[in-house]
Image (tube, rainbow, N blue to C red; front, side):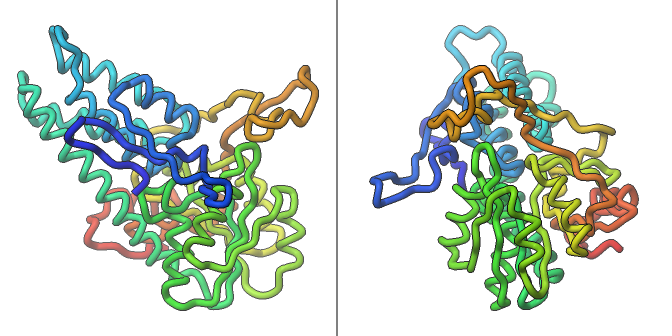
Length: 359
């Protein structure tokens, strides 16, 4: 699990994803950070030290739980303080709906504690809820993997973008959970990962996870997807993650996903999205797109300037894939298909014990 909670300190512990992959030859191990401070939690989210919608949700839940352990001395209204700081955490990034979803779930437990709960009662309730969110996201990934595996035929080459594996998605993976489950089922599969500029999550993290799991894999540049599709024989499928899904089936995912879906349609390749129901936004009718610092585009991983200092750059972190380009949305309760307004609503309201495929 890429996020943990240290109850002895009331601290959140997280894997620093910007420093992945580890490289023993260069003396670089995994880096884990620990904090009890709201400013550090917000920094971790903004800098993508913590990233991936399900993992962001788990992190946010433990960050809110940490607040109950670390109310400043002399704070006259601890509950109001916790609510204010939780709101700051929820506003750290705009696109991944799991962030707000997790904070709201944490704060909603206050309603069950009565009008004047003790700080100790709030602490216990928050920690219980955060642990439940962590457990549910991990188990959701396993069920997503099982449903997704039913779509992957033996001999399939799976194309993906960015990283929707263990570190991004609650410890098991969403898109990554699909190929991990297929590989564990002894299917002859391989994965093609796009580098995913500008921060290289596909190259840095997805390839590291694939190699660690022993799954045959190939890294390609973002501009090589069409060439690779045209020159890969046999069965092919796209499986990607998501940061927010509207009930109408529109999907926000890492920038470049929209063009992948267009290429999939051109080549007649199924395009699947894998995400837990916590990533479905049942209220919004549009998706805010995070615009990140243009310097991320102008400098390779912040280390090498690749253009002029005065070049104008834009850096959208996500794009939105229209529902007409999506073959199916794989959730922990089943596989939704068009019309998504009906199938996703049915799954969102389904009993978790009655997982099924919605056609």
